Amino acid sequence: MSGNEARVQAIHEIVNRKPISVSAPKPNSEIWASDVFNLAKMEKALPKAAFIAIRNTIHTSAKLEHEVADLVATALKDWALLNCGPCPSIRKCCLSSSSNAAIKKAPDPGAFFELLS
Image 1 (spheres, rainbow, N blue to C red):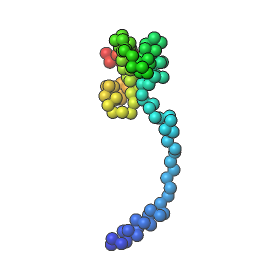
Image 2: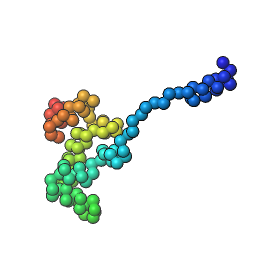
Image 3: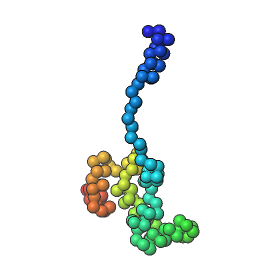
Image 4: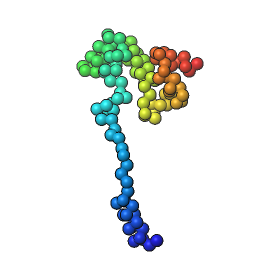
């Protein structure tokens, strides 16, 4: 087949191809920052006093007590272990895809460590 015949055949195939059906993806508002430990998720995961302290620190740069920082760090770790996202660096915290499935079924964040032993 000459170069011209190949081009003519390629154009013919492009023009006569059948359309592929596709579905619309989720709107950006549903997926944007869905894997972020934001204030709304902190409010659910932290005791009220700790949430107020971290919110105050975020908004006013006030000093955060070490005890509150420890609570926030623990809540973030527990949230991350239960919500391993599509990011490969986050998945490194999970030992395997089978443990990831077990983590999502765990009744409470502390149960993750029972799964490891």
